[in-house]
Structure formats: structure tokens, C-alpha cells
Length: 516
Image (cartoon, rainbow, N blue to C red):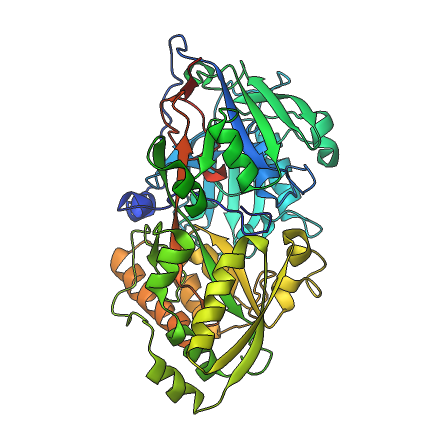
């Protein structure tokens, strides 16, 4: 799993027509359902197993996925996203764009409270986003709003106005992103773990470094009656093998269905599809020879057996990618782009008979993928590939000018399921802090701006095709496959996760119970 700024994982985002229905309807608002009434049924404690987190437990700055779980269970955002790509209200009850589409008005839920009993107000929302948007911000969420949000202001106690630099038709989806939990104004979040106040489904009761975290149900959560669990017990493990043994022993109630896990468990547990998870991008630093030559980048892209990658690396739980960053569950898909397949003759033609030597730098979770890429490339006879596999903390450590993931000649980094416009602005845009390829194209930047500024379906389709064609042709990043996420649940778990199993779905445990 991820401890990088890429934040595995978001949900099966923007599926079918629901994905863009909000903006294509020209309305951009949603009316919140009333909180569930009636007494909770079921109950029990959900035992959650995670890899020992390595990041600082600060809700504003954490980039470690498991640390985000720690914060997320006790916190809530304005909006969450369902597994079908539908926006659902949380601390916000409605959202709507202005006539010129340069502002979005968010109405807050009256009566919502933090776990310390204080009300959630517009002032808290403004303060939270001021921290994210500050020039001194260390929040990974800042990059999602850079160049999009100009200011955030309160308009009364329960209304917030986001003023934009430019029209952005998918803006509400940005509010489902990582590190966007609403926090009480003015608190010291560097020490959040000592006083973990939030507005989520659970209250953090005890944190034991190296061991785990315990939570109890939050009676002040806005939809508390729908939360059946009495609590969550999070346990830390050193690796997937330890998690597997714990799951088999009944110590934890879930585990990601990685190929090695699926092979060990077979069909004796319930497997739940959580939607598309990520792609593992092979990134070329185009400022370094020979990757400043587009023919070399294209040759590597044509050398890959993508079906073998899907089968070997992802155990079949993926679909083939085609070197543009649009997840298959997004409603508007590029069309007419030739699907790349392994083609040795084309590789040799592009290289002009030259042989290329280079090193792929990545971290331990990507080792299997890196080894297969190495084997496939070397099998062509045109490449000599070395691997530099390092601990995740080392791979993502350091400043932007020194960290390996942004500066090595070729890297493999995972990118979560995000909006196409977000991925383009983060991966390809000039000036992006996360542009590890150091690639830029003014035309691509312009097309992306136009794409997010329109709500016309036909225009979006045309722009999506043009964007994909540039990414496919210039190939600063190879997108070989999109991974689908599955988890196994113990037989004691009843119900399902209504909005996925990750931060964009609010780490939502409503409807879930555990039998004794």
C-alpha cells in the first residue's frame, strides 16, 4: 500500500453517467438525505489489520496511507464519493456552482458536531482549507487545489464559498480527496494524536505506537444511528505475510486480495470488489538522456507484454492500459487510440539498432512489477536494465530536488484513481511538484484547462481524445495496466462497505457489523 503522495486508494471513481451527471446537468447540487433513524442492529468490533504506519499522524500533512486510516476513522469531510462515482453529502448537505462557474457554494449540515461536542461551522471549514492552501502548506492536498481555488470564505455560520481561478466542472470531487477532513479551527494538528478531535464515525480512544489503535463509536456523528459497530480495533503488522497469518487465525476481519493472498486463501472467504485502485506508472525523466528522445520512450512502451503484466503482477485483477491517465471507470473515455501491444520489430525500428542501458528505481512494493519489466525489456535484446529497489521511506524521502521518485532516470510510482484532470495536472503539468518526468507540453496544459472548464459532453469527448493522443505519443509515463482492488472479509463480517474502503468514500463503516 501507499505511503507516497499518490494516496492509494480512491474509489471506483466517476463510474458510468453518474460520474459527470452532476456537472452535465448544469446544476451541481445535491440534497442530503435525512440521517438514518431507528436503533442500530448488529454491532461488534471490526478488527482491521494494516501495515505499521511510517508517517507523522497529522491530518493536514500525512501522506502515509495507513496513517490516513488512523485519522480518517475519526474524521469526516464535506462530501464523499460512492463506489459508483456518485457524490454523497457528509458535513455538507448541498453544493452548487455560480452562474459564471467561478464559485461553488457549500451548505453545511446543521447540527453536525465534532467529537468534543463543538458544532462544525463554516469557520472550521475555512480554517481547514486555509491551512491546505497556504503558501507554506505541507499538505499533499494542496496540489489538488493549486491553480483552481483562489479563496475560501464563510457566508454565515453554515455556508462556505469556494472562489475559483477558473471554471472547474468536477470541483466537488476534489473535496472527497485525501487530507480534506474538516478540522476544528486553530488546533495544533502536529500533535493531533494526543487530542484526536474529529467529526467521524468513531472516536480514537488509544494509540499505541508499533501495536495499534482502538476506536469507539462516536455518538455525535451526524448519522450515528446507521453505524452498527461499537468500535474498530486497528492492529499493526510488518508485512502482508503477517497480515495473512493474522487473517487466517481470525485476528483480523479483512485483508487485501493480493495474488499471494488469493493463492493462499482460495474461495473460502467473501471477496468484495472495491473498484479500480491504481496504476503503477513507469516514469521517464525526460531531462536525462536517452529519455529525452521520444523514440526511446516509445520503444520501451512497445516492448511490454501488457497481458502478461496483468496476469503476473496483478493476478488477473487489472485491465490493460494504453499510456494515458484515464481510469476505465470514468464516464468519458478516449476513443480511436491504437492499443499498444508487444512488438519487437517496432522496438528495433524506433531504436535504429541501438542498445539502451538504464536503471529502474522504485520501492519494495513495486519489486515484482519492476522485475517483470526488466525481464520483458531484456528479452528483446535491445535493453540492459538494472533495478534499484529501496525501502518506501527512502524512495519518497528527501526534498523535491533530492527524492529518488522525482529525480531518478526511470521510476515506478503508483497513482490512485483520480479525476482525469487531476492526474493530468499532477503528472504532466509544467510546475507540478509531482511531475517526476519533468515533461511539459503547453498544448496539453491548455486542453486540460478546457476539459475541466466545460460541461458539454461532446466537447469533453473531443478534448479527452486530444489529451490521450498527446500522452500516448509523447509517453513520458507508461500506463501498462489499471489495477482493480479486492478485499477478503472474514465470515464474521455482515453487510458491506456502502461507499468503498478508502478516504474518498469516507472510510465508511455504516451497514457493517461483526458477529461474535
